[in-house]
Image (cartoon, rainbow, N blue to C red; front, top):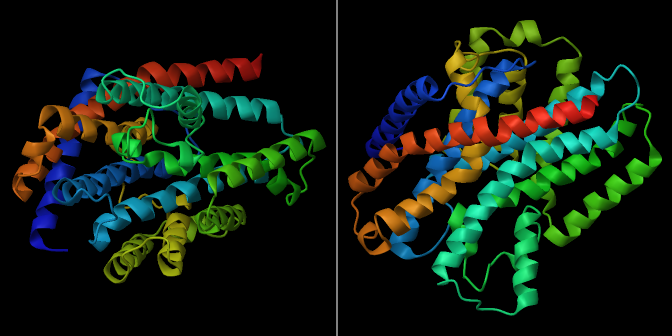
Length: 383
C-alpha cells in the first residue's frame, strides 16, 4: 500500500469518526442489548470498507468505463474479505441460536417472519430508489416489452436472485446504480432456508413440512441464482466458529491482547500476499480472526465501544445505500464528464466529504425504517 492510499484511508476514517459522533447527537438512537457486542461493533467497519471498495472501483470505472475488481490487494479485500466476514457472522449467529436452543423446538414461521421484517423493508426502500433512478435515466419511457420489464422488476424485488434479469427497462448495467451489492443477499437467504436442515445435525426437533419446504426453496434459489459453491465456504467457517465457541474453551484465552495482535497479523499477511479474499488462506484467516472476536476480544476496546456499536447498528442501511449515493454523486452532482477528469486528490476528497451525508441518511433509515419494522416483527412473534 503506497503513501497516497494511506492518506486516503486515514482521511476517510477521520471523516467517519467525526460524522458518527456528530450524527449521533443529531439523530439519537439507543444501543440495543446484544449477546456479542464486539460483533456489532465490527459490522459497521465492514460495511464502511465495502464503501471504500466500491469508491475505488468507481474511480477506475470513470477512467476506463470498466467495472472491475481493484488491482490493489487492500481495496479488493475491503470488498471480498468483508463479505466473507458478513457470511461468517450470519452462520455463527444462527448456528449459535440452534446450539443454545433449550426447548428442542423452533417456530419456523416466526423465524421466517423475523427475517422478512428485518431484511425486506429496508431493501425494498433501496429498490424503490433504484426504480426511480431507472425511470429518470430512461426518460420515463418504456423501452422493453412488458413481460421483460416484469421479470426484471420481480427479480429486483426478490433480492435480485436472477442475474439474467437484472437490467431494468433495458438500462444496461443497472447494477451500477447500487454498485451491485445485491449479489450477496440470495446467499444469505439460501442459508436461512437451509437452517432447518442444519438443525437436524444438532438433534433439534424439526417440523418435516418446514424442513422439506425450506430446503426446496433454498434449492430453487440456488438454481435460479446459479449460485457458486465457493461462496458457501464462509458459512461453513461461521458454523465451525460457533461449535468452537460453544465448547467454552476459548473465551478467556482469546480475549488476551496478544491475540488481538495475532488477528491483525493474520489480516496483514492476507492483504500483503493475496488480492482475493476468497482463496483458502484469506478465508481461514478471516475465520480465525472472527473466532478471536467472537470469544470477546474487543481489539483494545474499539469494537465494544459505544461509538462502534452505534455505528454497527446502521450496517444494513450503509451496505444497501452507499452504492446509490456514489451513483448520485458522480452522475447528478459532479457529472460523469467532469468526474472523468478528477485527480486522485479531488476524487478522494469527494469521497471523504460524502461520508457525512452517507452516515446521516443511514442513521435516519435505521431509525425510521429498520427499527420500527424490527419492533413490529417482535410484537407479531409474541402475539
